[in-house]
Image 1 (tube, rainbow, N blue to C red):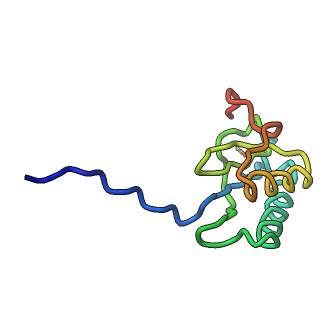
Image 2 (tube, rainbow, N blue to C red; image 1 turned 180 degrees about the vertical axis):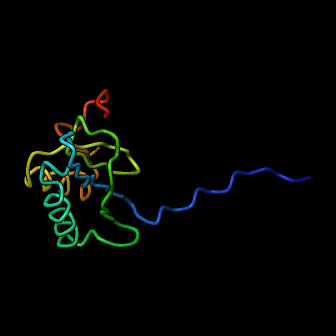
Length: 118
Ligand code: FES
């Protein structure tokens, strides 16, 4: 007689994975690149590294193209929690790094409203 068991879920390679939309449109439509997304991405990478959070089993910060939530832009999303953020300046990025990426506590005030898409 065999016993049926579900294999354990594999451990994620990264504890948290952050994607910043860096899309820049040149047709006049709103895009995250219009709101200093590149500077926010660069700052987040720098802060994550400085805090010792970067690497396997920890945090990875990646560039992304359009994530189709342009109306809320600039946006970034943190997995596995799937928390969508918008931000105004680099102090908002500091708060996401400190509270969410370091402390595991999402920053509620920076969450994208759930109905905002493209
Ligand atoms: S341009 Fe950033 S989500 Fe679409």
